[in-house]
Image 1 (cartoon, rainbow, N blue to C red):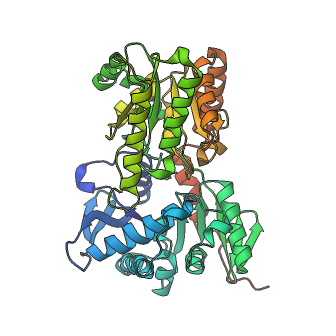
Image 2 (image 1 turned 90 degrees about the vertical axis):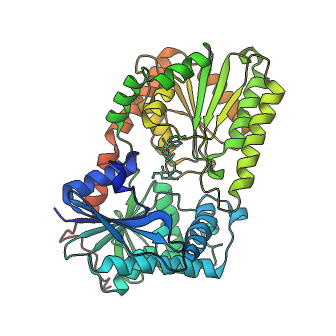
Image 3 (image 1 turned 90 degrees about the horizontal axis):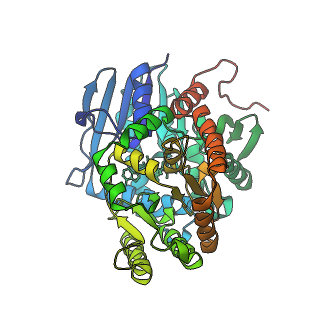
Length: 466
Ligand code: ADQ
């Protein structure tokens, strides 16, 4: 088995025990099996104009290398190009992109910084796996430094349609960055199609079929690898979590009312104001449900230092306040809105006691909350998932109630249908979704990607001779 080198923007702090959360756990276990190195940003600022050195921590078979970034890096690479250009662009929010040439330069500088530090750590035969939109140019930087190893990339967020992508003034550099990999993984076939179409319209390549693409005279693999969760572990955790004190207290506090749950990082892509409007619409159209159901929206703040996020955070809070002011009574608050992160076990228990999971992002690469909600249900009496058709998860979870998240009335109608759904239909939908989740869990995702990345004498990328 080849040794594995992982590079991601954030790396779980190895001094704080084993990582929590699906992706970190999966990568950790792949690294443990193969042995290897995990490099990335520590999440801290060096406090100066220069990034800090890579600090190494050995944990069994894994060497973690974390670097503090400089204030300038954080402003240009992280807050700037990654989160004020690529994130909004890939989520179709052109109105929020703030393009500045210095941020683009900072983005390439930080990629070069990590590539230069990584070069000396890579041994012949190592597989290199780069994660997400922060690090698209890593392969071309590593190639420039003479690295010939197999390098793969996984895009966790959507790849937008070419018309949207081409609004990025430096789109050639970004797309060329991706074509330097041996394997490029996307969440869904839609993302792969959008990418292939961009290569074609740009006149630099296209889809060869069978999971192969060509660009700049070289061929590489590009396919969908839909990310999953640890289904078995989550289901067991949810079963046990109904005894969790926080979950019990929450259940008691709802005094027998049906619980509708929303769990999302506080991000504009998650469609929270539309969701709250949809819930209000449901209460207006179904007055008999007033006082009998509550929406619990759990949304920890994220990226509060990125422009655009504070305004959005205020708008979501105002929406919750407005609905509660208009519809609430002395003994009933329609929306309970909290900005806290909750532990995994509590989260699993809350999903399980909820009648409806409301997952309505305006755009999402995959959305793991949808998958966690399903995995947490009681198979004998499952809740209903209402899912945005613009989440990558909708491609697999097509037995959910799929909604257009921009259509407020559709959200309201789906809530009404979910709350009234007979047990038989709930079980049928749950069973279909659970089967899909079990077939494609997080270990399969990891194994499939690494199998594609392993060198294969028949498939090795080569210069196109024709
Ligand atoms: P995110 O945008 O962060 O991920 P998501 O896939 O939903 O979105 O993952 C969020 C994770 O955070 C879930 O595991 C969830 O349980 C957890 N979480 C959210 N709110 C929480 C809370 N209040 N308390 C505790 N935990 C909470 C990006 C892409 C997604 C893609 C993932 C993985 O934007 O589309 O699915 O990467 O590839």
